[in-house]
Structures are given as C-alpha cells and as structure tokens.
Length: 264
Image (cartoon, rainbow, N blue to C red):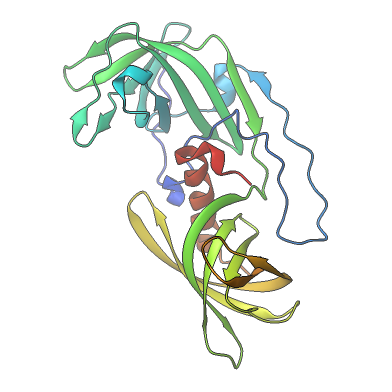
C-alpha cells in the first residue's frame, strides 16, 4: 500500500480545501479597471500523482442525489495504486452519511494552485478500527489552474477607514488574493488613496480578524439590490503580511469548494 507522508499544519485549512475543476475555468480579473483579463483556464486530464495528495488532505465528496446530503468532506487515509483510494467516512450533523457499496460519487481536490475532479464509486464501507471507505481508484482526473487573482462572491461586513475620516460601514461583495470590491453608501475615498479594511474571515468555523491596507483603484455609482443608490469601489491590497495573505487565500479557496458557482 502506498501511503503519502502526513500533511503539515496549514492555515491553510482553507488551502487544503478542494475546488471545483469544472468551475475553475471561469475568467479571472483583478479589481483594477485597467487590468488585462486573463484567458480562461484550460481543462486538462491529469494522472493521479499530479494531484500531489497526502495523507490527511481534505477532499470534497459529492454524494448521490437520493441521499439528500449534497457535498461533504473527507480526509485521505491512503491509497493502493490503481486499486483503491481510502478516505474517512463522511459525517454530516454528527451522523455518518449512509453510503453503500457501488454508490457513485464525485471527488474534488485542490493542490498546488490547481483544482481537480474525478468520478469514483464506493468499493467497500468499513467500520473497524474506525469508519472509512474504499473508493475506486480514479481512471480519469480532470483539472485546471486557479489563477492568483481568482475572485469569489462573498458578503462580508467591513469598516473602511481613510486618514482623517470616520470609518465607513461597507460590504465586501467579492474578494481575491489581490483585492476586494466594496459596496457602500458613499465613496470610501479618492482613487489612489490608501484605506484600512477591518473584517472577519471565517475559515472552517473559526473567525480571524483582519486589518489590511488597500488602495482605491475605482469608484462607480450603482444600484445595490434592495438598497438605495450605492457606490461600488475596487480596492487592491497593499503590503499584506504573509499570515494575512494566507488567510485571504484560504477564504477564497474555501468559497470555491463550498460554493463552486461563486467564481466571478
């Protein structure tokens, strides 16, 4: 049996999350109105080893529709080359998901800036010495690159503070590793002005408070659904600390895995 080495600790609890390979080809842009659009990612076929999966890595599993549970998460226990991928049994609401032999599933993974997906089936459900599953070894793995500036839809309350001004209540409506788009009742400042954003990033049920600098790169008046006239502003992060950058990337990847249609 070939077993990968244990996964190293990561903040990256969000970065070890899997992403939807079918959605990763969406067009990515930065928040700057002058930024050139990147070409769509090309969906490719990969070998299992190209995913660089390790014992303990987190995978998303899409269960058969009749079970009514949708997408759940499992962790890799190990694998037998060309025979079986061994994962922990999925749990939802404290209860083991009732998968049985021959159930078809879709598995998604994220590794090294790429998103992967493959079809599999349950070979055997096991309960001793713990609950785990043998899945059929993937015959075909599809994947595509997730670029640095992938933006995802979110709704995060934030305080936007400019020098000499009262903090402005705003909502982050999309975010990437390079910046955000805000919706607020008025402009947070002039283009080129530096502001500070204070908001919570929730990664796997844990809130992390972020306070980061950003430069305003665009302001435009727009109607926000259910509100009066608002201003949408594009901001690019400046001088991010490594820890803050990791948390923001984790938030982006978590959104991709939990809501594959969130890519802007």
